[in-house]
Image (tube, rainbow, N blue to C red; front, side, top):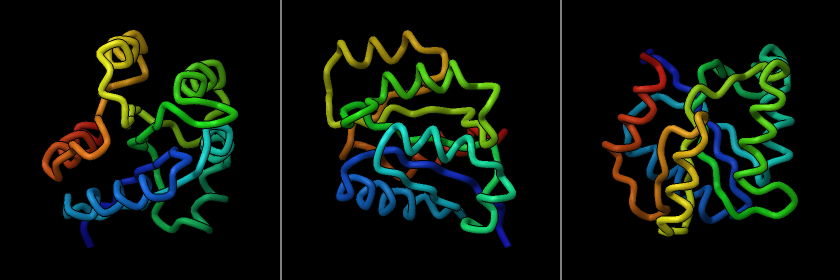
Length: 142
C-alpha cells in the first residue's frame, strides 16, 4: 500500500469541500481526508488525541496539510491561524503546512497571508492543479 498522507479541510461551504476533494483525488496520492465546516470545529479536531481520531479515520497521522478557508462564520481563517498559534502546545495533530484556500483573489488577502509564519501558501479556489496540490502535500512530508 502507498504511503498515506493526512489532509484537513476547514471550510464552511460543503460544495467547496467537495470540489477540493475532487481536486485532491486527482493528485493520485493516498489520502486520509478530515473535513470540518468551521474554524472552531477545526481547532477541536486538531486537539483531539490522535489515538481517538485513528478510530474514526484509520491511517490518520501528523504532519497534516491543512486547507483553510478565510470567510467562515464564528471563527474565520485568520482567527483560526491565531488560535492555532496560541494553542500550539495543545494540538495533538499538528498541521505543519497551512494553505489558505479562498475564493478571494485579493492582493491584500494574499499579502496578509504572507504575514503569518504558519501559512505556507495561498490558493485561489478553482485554480489549483493536481500537480500543485500534490507538490504542496509532498513538501509537507519531506
